[in-house]
Length: 385
Image (tube, rainbow, N blue to C red):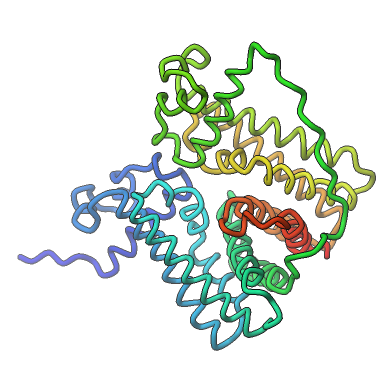
């Protein structure tokens, strides 16, 4: 007797895998968990995919294929906002899979996915350049990457908003970003954050380890960084790391605590020092952009490595993220009372994704006017311009 596989089984597997990776992080999800989510056995899953790396690779490519299809259609309609918003809602995990998990793939697969994403941006840029021929190529590309980041912000919402509403808001945001002028001084104050107090000398080595850990964990992923690499980054032997931290997991937890403390100190301090909600929101935006420009690895590690924390530490990190978001949503709604909580959350998540990606996305991250560009685009996303 021939046993026929149900139609669309691979698509069903990829949808479940993408959702699991998105919610829990690649390393936290097993093939058995994906199989259970589909209602098949693990051996049956391996008949479709050879392992987790292939499963992640195919899940990302599925989303990128949908993006490419939407952008090809936009060449006819000219409506990039509708195309990007539809993909963001229909493939909500794509943002986190690309920004957080895809870096864990083998180098050849990472490079291939990056080429696919660049090809998608080239399609976008062609459409935008036809509408705005006055834009320099580099500015058009920056706007297109920024629009993608804005849509990826939807991936980081813990609860998905109603699809039609999310599409409508995201389309408006994409239109605002693509209509912006990237260069030039941004409107509104952008105060420099207060310098951090110097650390006591006896703790200098510990602080060096924390800074090195944030950078390496963000760039390579927690599991791909050894204690020997951590030690070498600060000029000590690998085993000497344990004089300062009991384990690599403790070092990760401490480095993320330090990242959150510095982010809160600089951004909340700027907001608290301002007079009035509008000035506070502008000051917070300036402080967040300034922090991201100087500490992109801190933000990257908080986004990519929180899922690797032990459950108690992860709960603390998630609580911080919610409190930070709640502060911004409340402030934005004071400045723009016409926004309800749903729209304000979408806009704030879009802002964070825009800035977090902007400081790490080469070659645009090397622009000397990047700070002004991000301030201008951030104001457009928040509806302040």
